Length: 462
Image (cartoon, rainbow, N blue to C red; front, side, top):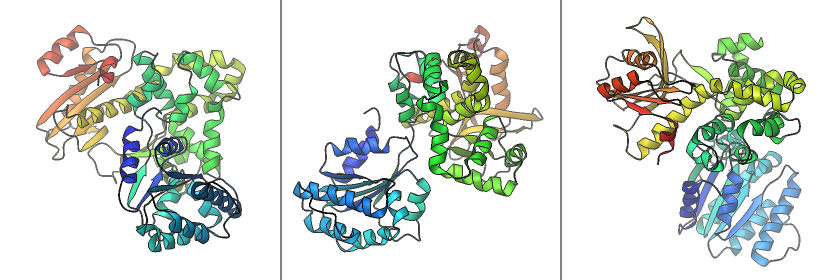
């Protein structure tokens, strides 16, 4: 299994505890939760039960079988109730046992009383036993509200929580060991850090060939994945499609999104909140500003959704006539535009990694993109990545370019001018990342300013 070393270590730490532990695990679909739990189960005494979208009696029967086979190596008949199966676990557990129920929301959707039944089992039996209970689910809203929420019978019973998040660019690069570092970043810009998507690309084929065969071609797994993902999570997918299409085309504020799709702003706001809960979009404010800032915008957080809505969703009929190979060629001709935004996120991940290794001048308290009015220039300005310390007396200003020519002095000076929008910051550090390197004037000026000039390969230096 690639990656997930820290998550696996955390599971093992809880398993090795000498008391009852209850972990609530969540994460969006395709992020690799089940694979992680299966890997953990290989080296532990585990009952692993994957719930399904079945009626309550069938899930109970399946769980009964898993439990009886674990304790008795045979299956006689389903337990008559969830109370009975949980009581059986409590009565028969002696050595350390992990009880994993994957996709727990499928069970409580059919039978909400299971939450109360499980709560009673925890309070009166499990907490005195050598049990490590894991409830896992892809429906993040259900895990947060129906399992951990204040109105849930299970509220405050958990001893730990773990959200499984997508890989960062360096972890994702492990799927493409034969690619150049530039192509690894492009693959990440297209697919993001979702393991299931990364597995679909063939590392023995070029990115263009993979786009044609694994995304654009009718019937390919990734061709239908965005629609399948939204249908699995949402109703009224046509409205959500419209919202995501609007954001992908650059409509980032609620008012612009609402106008673009001809819907009421209040209604759009509710749909945006749902997409945020699913971790598909993200609300952003300029780095260092309050979360209630009026400058807030919405961006598609999932890289593959961003790619799909930018290209396939908008041009589906055209690509069908053009053919997958020609469509992929056309997409690759535009890929530097997609990668402009993607590189900003990658550079943020790079700084976070460097901070964890104590390789930055300070530990950032806030990090992200900044935009707003530059009072010196009396014009709108932005910084690709801004990192501020806790007191906002130090800052890293970073410019990220994924263009085909070396960075000219003017673009270097643009970042210098952007720093003037922060007169109260005492210590300013300049960082640049350029796919195609730097012109000689930039290199000379960077030496004078003690600026850091990075190229693509530098992002992969451990």
